[in-house]
Image 1 (cartoon, rainbow, N blue to C red):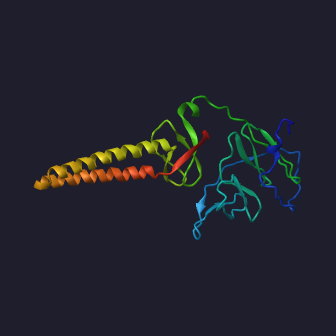
Image 2 (image 1 turned 60 degrees about the vertical axis):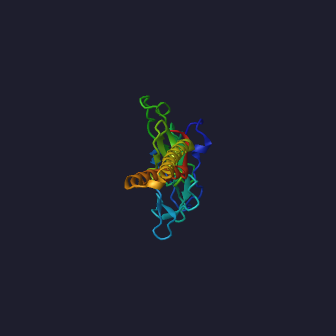
Length: 243
Protein backbone atom coordinates (compact mmCIF):
# COMPACT_ATOMS: atom_id res chain seq x y z
CA UNK A 1 0.00 0.00 0.00
CA UNK A 2 1.29 3.48 -0.84
CA UNK A 3 2.74 5.65 1.91
CA UNK A 4 0.28 8.46 1.11
CA UNK A 5 -2.63 6.32 2.30
CA UNK A 6 -4.03 7.80 5.49
CA UNK A 7 -3.76 5.76 8.69
CA UNK A 8 -7.46 6.23 9.40
CA UNK A 9 -8.38 4.34 6.24
CA UNK A 10 -6.43 1.30 7.45
CA UNK A 11 -8.27 1.05 10.75
CA UNK A 12 -11.35 -1.15 11.22
CA UNK A 13 -14.48 0.53 12.52
CA UNK A 14 -14.67 -2.06 15.31
CA UNK A 15 -11.49 -3.54 16.75
CA UNK A 16 -12.80 -6.88 18.14
CA UNK A 17 -11.19 -9.61 16.06
CA UNK A 18 -11.88 -13.34 16.01
CA UNK A 19 -8.51 -14.75 17.08
CA UNK A 20 -9.37 -18.26 15.83
CA UNK A 21 -9.61 -17.29 12.15
CA UNK A 22 -7.04 -18.79 9.81
CA UNK A 23 -3.95 -17.02 8.44
CA UNK A 24 -4.45 -15.71 4.88
CA UNK A 25 -2.05 -15.07 2.07
CA UNK A 26 -1.01 -11.44 2.59
CA UNK A 27 0.55 -10.90 -0.81
CA UNK A 28 -2.49 -11.72 -2.97
CA UNK A 29 -4.73 -8.69 -3.74
CA UNK A 30 -8.47 -9.29 -3.48
CA UNK A 31 -11.53 -7.25 -4.42
CA UNK A 32 -13.38 -5.46 -1.64
CA UNK A 33 -17.15 -5.32 -1.26
CA UNK A 34 -18.74 -1.89 -1.02
CA UNK A 35 -21.01 -1.79 2.02
CA UNK A 36 -24.17 0.32 2.15
CA UNK A 37 -26.29 1.21 5.20
CA UNK A 38 -28.95 -1.31 6.13
CA UNK A 39 -32.58 -0.15 6.25
CA UNK A 40 -33.85 -0.23 9.82
CA UNK A 41 -37.07 -1.99 10.77
CA UNK A 42 -38.97 -2.05 14.09
CA UNK A 43 -38.93 -5.20 16.17
CA UNK A 44 -42.26 -7.07 15.97
CA UNK A 45 -42.43 -7.54 19.75
CA UNK A 46 -40.81 -4.52 21.43
CA UNK A 47 -41.16 -2.06 18.56
CA UNK A 48 -37.51 -0.99 18.94
CA UNK A 49 -35.55 -0.28 15.73
CA UNK A 50 -33.38 -3.17 14.55
CA UNK A 51 -31.06 -4.07 11.69
CA UNK A 52 -29.81 -7.36 10.28
CA UNK A 53 -26.10 -8.09 10.68
CA UNK A 54 -24.39 -8.23 7.28
CA UNK A 55 -22.09 -11.05 8.43
CA UNK A 56 -24.10 -13.56 10.49
CA UNK A 57 -27.66 -12.27 9.71
CA UNK A 58 -28.42 -11.86 13.42
CA UNK A 59 -30.84 -9.14 14.58
CA UNK A 60 -29.14 -6.11 16.18
CA UNK A 61 -31.09 -3.80 18.50
CA UNK A 62 -30.12 -0.18 17.66
CA UNK A 63 -32.41 1.57 20.12
CA UNK A 64 -30.49 4.64 21.33
CA UNK A 65 -27.76 4.11 18.71
CA UNK A 66 -29.39 5.65 15.63
CA UNK A 67 -26.99 8.61 15.83
CA UNK A 68 -24.03 6.27 15.24
CA UNK A 69 -22.72 5.37 11.79
CA UNK A 70 -22.09 1.69 12.62
CA UNK A 71 -23.15 -0.79 15.30
CA UNK A 72 -21.48 -3.95 16.57
CA UNK A 73 -23.22 -7.30 16.29
CA UNK A 74 -23.40 -9.03 19.70
CA UNK A 75 -23.26 -12.45 18.00
CA UNK A 76 -20.19 -12.14 15.72
CA UNK A 77 -18.66 -8.84 16.98
CA UNK A 78 -18.51 -7.46 13.43
CA UNK A 79 -19.68 -3.99 12.37
CA UNK A 80 -22.78 -3.17 10.32
CA UNK A 81 -23.40 0.36 8.96
CA UNK A 82 -26.76 2.00 9.77
CA UNK A 83 -26.06 5.46 8.35
CA UNK A 84 -24.41 6.68 5.20
CA UNK A 85 -20.66 7.24 5.35
CA UNK A 86 -19.38 10.80 5.94
CA UNK A 87 -18.96 12.99 2.84
CA UNK A 88 -16.08 11.80 0.69
CA UNK A 89 -15.95 8.40 2.43
CA UNK A 90 -17.34 4.93 1.75
CA UNK A 91 -17.58 1.59 3.56
CA UNK A 92 -15.68 -1.47 2.34
CA UNK A 93 -16.07 -5.03 3.67
CA UNK A 94 -12.90 -7.13 3.63
CA UNK A 95 -13.30 -10.88 2.89
CA UNK A 96 -12.34 -11.46 6.54
CA UNK A 97 -15.56 -9.52 7.42
CA UNK A 98 -13.68 -6.48 8.77
CA UNK A 99 -15.64 -3.30 7.95
CA UNK A 100 -13.35 -0.46 6.78
CA UNK A 101 -13.95 3.14 5.83
CA UNK A 102 -11.88 4.88 3.16
CA UNK A 103 -11.97 7.75 0.70
CA UNK A 104 -14.32 7.40 -2.25
CA UNK A 105 -11.32 7.98 -4.54
CA UNK A 106 -9.21 5.18 -3.00
CA UNK A 107 -8.30 2.29 -5.31
CA UNK A 108 -6.36 0.08 -2.89
CA UNK A 109 -6.46 -0.26 0.90
CA UNK A 110 -4.93 -2.72 3.35
CA UNK A 111 -6.87 -4.64 5.98
CA UNK A 112 -5.37 -3.76 9.40
CA UNK A 113 -6.17 -7.06 11.11
CA UNK A 114 -2.96 -8.86 12.09
CA UNK A 115 -4.24 -12.22 10.87
CA UNK A 116 -5.40 -10.84 7.50
CA UNK A 117 -3.32 -7.94 6.07
CA UNK A 118 -4.96 -8.33 2.68
CA UNK A 119 -4.47 -5.72 -0.02
CA UNK A 120 -7.99 -4.86 -1.18
CA UNK A 121 -8.53 -3.64 -4.75
CA UNK A 122 -11.47 -1.25 -5.01
CA UNK A 123 -11.38 -0.91 -8.80
CA UNK A 124 -11.19 2.22 -10.93
CA UNK A 125 -12.70 5.43 -9.62
CA UNK A 126 -15.69 6.52 -11.74
CA UNK A 127 -15.24 9.86 -13.46
CA UNK A 128 -17.94 12.31 -12.31
CA UNK A 129 -20.08 13.82 -15.06
CA UNK A 130 -20.80 17.55 -14.90
CA UNK A 131 -24.30 17.10 -16.35
CA UNK A 132 -26.17 17.05 -13.04
CA UNK A 133 -24.50 19.28 -10.52
CA UNK A 134 -26.07 18.98 -7.03
CA UNK A 135 -25.06 22.56 -6.21
CA UNK A 136 -26.64 23.95 -9.38
CA UNK A 137 -29.85 21.94 -8.99
CA UNK A 138 -30.17 22.65 -5.26
CA UNK A 139 -30.05 18.99 -4.26
CA UNK A 140 -28.78 18.32 -0.76
CA UNK A 141 -28.70 15.72 1.99
CA UNK A 142 -31.46 16.13 4.57
CA UNK A 143 -31.78 14.50 8.00
CA UNK A 144 -35.40 13.41 8.59
CA UNK A 145 -36.96 14.89 11.74
CA UNK A 146 -38.94 11.67 12.34
CA UNK A 147 -36.51 8.75 11.83
CA UNK A 148 -33.12 10.60 11.75
CA UNK A 149 -32.29 8.94 8.40
CA UNK A 150 -30.59 10.86 5.57
CA UNK A 151 -32.17 11.33 2.14
CA UNK A 152 -31.78 13.60 -0.89
CA UNK A 153 -34.07 16.60 -1.37
CA UNK A 154 -34.17 19.44 -3.89
CA UNK A 155 -34.32 22.66 -1.89
CA UNK A 156 -35.26 24.78 -4.92
CA UNK A 157 -38.80 23.41 -4.71
CA UNK A 158 -41.31 24.62 -2.13
CA UNK A 159 -42.92 21.20 -1.69
CA UNK A 160 -42.79 19.46 1.67
CA UNK A 161 -40.24 16.65 2.00
CA UNK A 162 -41.47 13.06 2.35
CA UNK A 163 -38.82 10.76 3.83
CA UNK A 164 -38.31 7.61 1.69
CA UNK A 165 -37.47 5.60 4.83
CA UNK A 166 -40.42 6.31 7.18
CA UNK A 167 -42.75 7.92 4.55
CA UNK A 168 -43.55 10.80 6.92
CA UNK A 169 -43.80 14.43 5.82
CA UNK A 170 -41.71 17.24 7.28
CA UNK A 171 -40.56 20.68 6.23
CA UNK A 172 -36.93 21.34 5.30
CA UNK A 173 -36.13 24.40 7.37
CA UNK A 174 -38.79 26.30 9.36
CA UNK A 175 -39.39 29.10 6.84
CA UNK A 176 -41.74 27.25 4.48
CA UNK A 177 -44.05 25.91 7.20
CA UNK A 178 -44.02 29.26 9.01
CA UNK A 179 -45.14 31.12 5.87
CA UNK A 180 -47.88 28.60 5.16
CA UNK A 181 -49.14 28.70 8.75
CA UNK A 182 -49.26 32.52 8.77
CA UNK A 183 -51.05 32.62 5.40
CA UNK A 184 -53.73 30.15 6.50
CA UNK A 185 -54.24 31.98 9.81
CA UNK A 186 -54.84 35.25 7.93
CA UNK A 187 -57.31 33.61 5.54
CA UNK A 188 -59.12 31.98 8.49
CA UNK A 189 -59.40 35.34 10.26
CA UNK A 190 -60.87 36.89 7.10
CA UNK A 191 -63.56 34.21 6.84
CA UNK A 192 -64.36 34.33 10.55
CA UNK A 193 -64.54 38.12 10.39
CA UNK A 194 -66.94 37.95 7.40
CA UNK A 195 -69.08 35.44 9.26
CA UNK A 196 -69.23 37.60 12.39
CA UNK A 197 -70.08 40.63 10.28
CA UNK A 198 -72.96 38.85 8.56
CA UNK A 199 -74.19 37.50 11.90
CA UNK A 200 -74.24 40.93 13.54
CA UNK A 201 -75.71 42.73 10.52
CA UNK A 202 -78.54 40.27 9.87
CA UNK A 203 -79.17 38.95 13.38
CA UNK A 204 -82.75 40.21 13.51
CA UNK A 205 -83.79 38.73 10.14
CA UNK A 206 -81.94 35.44 9.72
CA UNK A 207 -83.22 33.39 6.76
CA UNK A 208 -82.21 30.05 5.29
CA UNK A 209 -79.97 31.71 2.74
CA UNK A 210 -78.09 33.61 5.44
CA UNK A 211 -77.81 30.48 7.58
CA UNK A 212 -76.20 28.60 4.65
CA UNK A 213 -73.85 31.52 4.02
CA UNK A 214 -72.81 31.65 7.68
CA UNK A 215 -72.25 27.87 7.67
CA UNK A 216 -69.96 28.18 4.65
CA UNK A 217 -68.01 31.12 6.09
CA UNK A 218 -67.44 29.52 9.49
CA UNK A 219 -66.72 26.11 7.92
CA UNK A 220 -64.08 27.48 5.54
CA UNK A 221 -62.56 29.50 8.39
CA UNK A 222 -62.35 26.36 10.51
CA UNK A 223 -60.68 24.40 7.67
CA UNK A 224 -58.01 27.08 7.20
CA UNK A 225 -57.46 27.18 10.97
CA UNK A 226 -56.82 23.43 11.03
CA UNK A 227 -54.36 23.76 8.12
CA UNK A 228 -52.60 26.62 9.92
CA UNK A 229 -52.21 24.53 13.08
CA UNK A 230 -50.96 21.59 10.95
CA UNK A 231 -48.14 23.65 9.45
CA UNK A 232 -47.36 25.39 12.75
CA UNK A 233 -46.80 22.05 14.52
CA UNK A 234 -45.01 20.28 11.65
CA UNK A 235 -41.60 18.79 12.46
CA UNK A 236 -38.58 20.43 10.84
CA UNK A 237 -35.89 18.43 8.99
CA UNK A 238 -32.41 19.92 8.71
CA UNK A 239 -29.99 20.14 5.80
CA UNK A 240 -26.83 18.11 6.48
CA UNK A 241 -24.89 19.30 3.46
CA UNK A 242 -24.74 19.20 -0.35
CA UNK A 243 -25.44 15.89 -2.07
